[in-house]
Length: 285
Image 1 (cartoon, rainbow, N blue to C red):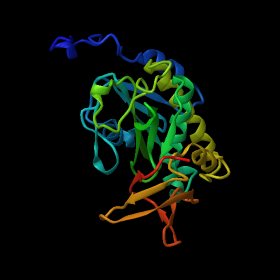
Image 2: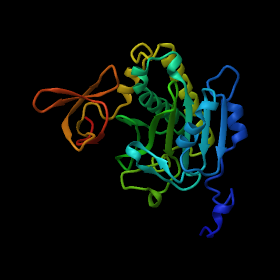
Image 3: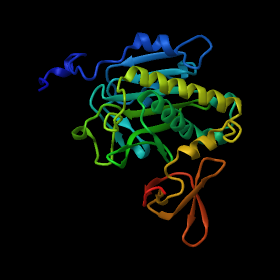
Image 4: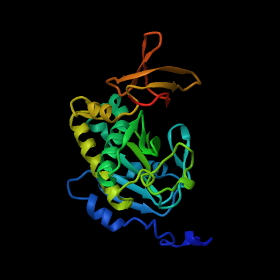
């Protein structure tokens, strides 16, 4: 049993060693690359809030990682909590404004989803899928479970902070809600967070660079096709719970050019959803 004062030691939980910040910097902060700095803190309320507060003084490509978030946030200001060193909790500062119109920034959470899913699938050996707009899914015991989420926030006129949280080694009795999961519960071949983080950051750099070079065009850079291929929401009957308390039910049939989810309703209409909670009502075909 872990002693009550175990949190005072960096090595109190041998299953969950601390990240190696020196090796991470050496691996991802390279000349000519996107990532310009990488900082690690033991604990903070929210890496998104911390990085946004410093955005004016930082160049694009700053990365902030926390071993533990005490007030991590998801969409709609929901909390995201997990035991220390049990996951990856980090934010990155991006400045797409110089190259990409603001009207296309809505693709950034979808881009981050594709990048994270691709990187994790390779490094952890786990099949990943995406639930529109910003959830990372794994399969645990034949059931889809959320193992990660993405949060995008503006940070000035030309910048955004993109936050990613991923459950890596959480056990069943540590899950915050019944529908949650982790890479470990999905039988990942590795839960070593250092290579997992490097894989996600490298994949994110690849997709962001490609998207920015295409001036944010999701078709030209392949993003729209890649997201649709990995999206577990498309082709399913879903309920979209919209801001304001309304809801619409239909089959998720496509993503439009703005990254919105297009539903074919029972009345034969098509409705594009730009925000809201999506509930999968039946399994994928």
